[in-house]
Length: 447
Image (tube, rainbow, N blue to C red; front, side, top):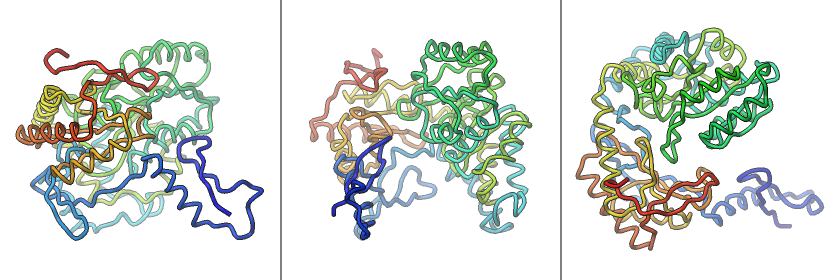
């Protein structure tokens, strides 16, 4: 009897044999082997590079393979500002670990809350101008736990979710068990149509992101807030790719656009621009207390270690006071876009620091990534389905303040070599609403 894999009800759903073929000797190993084989057949199997970052030499890392060690340059880190290696962050982490130990000792309900975590939550509330903050072990957990809990607590709640929301937000929507509707990405007419149909009397939660990490576009936050006010809805925004990066104190796009007070819940991460790990939400004290008291993803998870909390607090405080990192970052991101576009490479239009290059083929996307690493010492992870729609496979480049002009020129030369070797298209793609792309010539000078 041979197990087989099908997709049913979503990407990667696994089913074993037809029920009529199942006997008492089910081959469990074959089920998992075939599940992995299906990913390989579809060019969706992911291979992790064994990398060792070198403190003080960001974005340099050591790549280990088959006993060999090579220096490479990382071009796809979400440590956007290199704060994971900032002296103040490392000092806070090591000093606190020396004083308080490595771990948290358990959940906050069992072991209490470490003082650095109390300070971190106060720092986050201040950052976003909210009454309170709540820290989780990751950005995924904060979205899943907060969205599902808030929606369950609201009577007869309807969730209105942007079509391109992150998997963590989708998990929160799904696990809430409440009714949901998906509005076309950044389509305010479609959102208003849904809000109007739901009626002012019904509880509604609009969930969306500020920066969409695969395309680098930005939500029309103020206009979404206007619609929420008009139709009596709550708003929940994911700022994970924006906190630390935008606004006078690094509080994100909401701060940059002057709309923090218009959003009910602002969610963020400590693992990207702040260079550490963890997720959080901020909002009114009553809402934060309710999530703290009801969310299983918070209640039953060991809290972040004190040293991590101290490091995150140090990073936030530094970026509240310093705009130098953000200014240097924006310059290098814009320069990267311009240099790559001038080389004729397919830079997808992006409003932010995200620099996506369309490949459009899963096999060639993986081969391009491998060739960049093996031949040119450049690491850029391929982005394939289901992270992005089929046919829009891409390399996602994230410049940092430490990617100097010489590294950008080297990147352009390496990409040009790979593009010619794999016979990849050199026109720039424009994403369409249905997830497909059309091609048009685009140059940095002409836009």
